Image 1 (cartoon, rainbow, N blue to C red):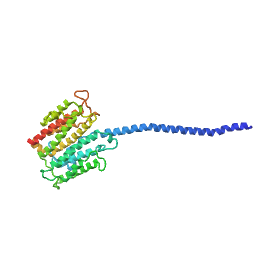
Image 2 (cartoon, rainbow, N blue to C red):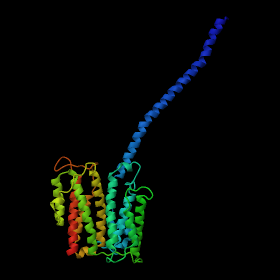
Image 3 (cartoon, one colour):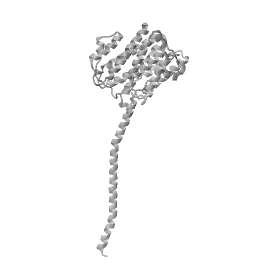
Length: 372
């Protein structure tokens, strides 16, 4: 065999391993490109999934809590025999319905789905504004009722000593609602709930002389005066959503006439609410109405005898009916801001109408307590 033939036969044998290495290198390169392509595709998919999860949580956390039964809540906290009567319920220990309702309202605000959101620094809470404003409305009413409990309901006269528990609770609930670190708003509000629970326990046991409750007409009237001002303010801000001075003047003029204090300057003082704040005002007013509904139901129980003596039960029923309509579920995902009899509704004006009717009924109730 010649050398040429030998070399010719050897060439294919030497080229085989080189060809296999090239194939392996090509396969590895293709696999690397395939992995990079998969990673490149997973990035947008992961981002979409993250956005969907955050959006879903945000929508779930934005659902307003349902109203609870004030009677059942009182029975759970201090026993089933805490209330006497069915048609016209009354608390056997005055003040227990008000304090138990304040505790439940505060716990609902703190422990609803998502917890307390107003001071959140991470998504989805930091991206939300409807529920945080609802929480602030609830907190506003809670502050008003706890302050009235401290200064009016538990004081026999102006020279009497206030309860240290209510003093601390009032201070706790007036802490900055957006504080998130050392201490956070939640920590202070939980401490306020603890003080209210201790006061409720002392009120039921009767062992603490500083834990008292005086269900008198003048005490209730002082609280209603605070509620009137809140409802008047919310009504004015809601009515200003359309930016129509004549419409705002008409709605505000009706509320002022009910109080007997209407002036042209007051009726036209409201400025148009910026479109970016319309939903903020709406949900804050809804939160206040939700908390006020439960508080007025508690007042009806603790002040049952006073309302009966002043023939004010019908006015109280009117207040509760209007507040129940003010907090019904809103099915539209957006707060619509139509005008007049246009195509779209105006949720702010609807809520302003119910709060205006509530305010008028509260004014009637206050007058009955004073003169009835």
